[in-house]
Image 1 (cartoon, rainbow, N blue to C red):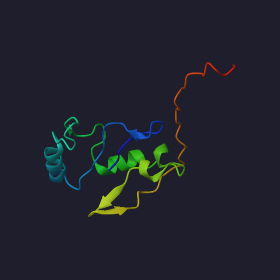
Image 2: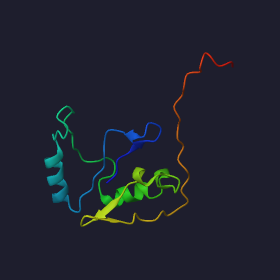
Image 3: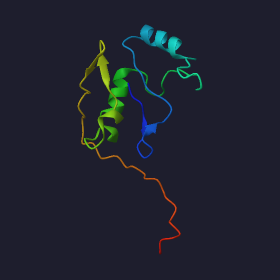
Length: 115
């Protein structure tokens, strides 16, 4: 499970990645989630296959060396792996992880402050 986060705004980007153990389980999950409206006032969810990565191993390979896995990042920003409902250790990186480059909000200069 991975909910990509806008690090500056500290909120989700509007989508999540969820992997299932088998293709039939994934197809059932897609069918069940597509069109779901968990918030009566919100939009219906759209479920689709992830591209270009589809399998759990592809997603692990993509994220294990990602800056989001850097030790300075909060745990709630990182992807997680579950097995039979229990959280598992995310596979260790295969190379050095660089810190993320976070673009901070640009603020308008305060006209009351001298330049």
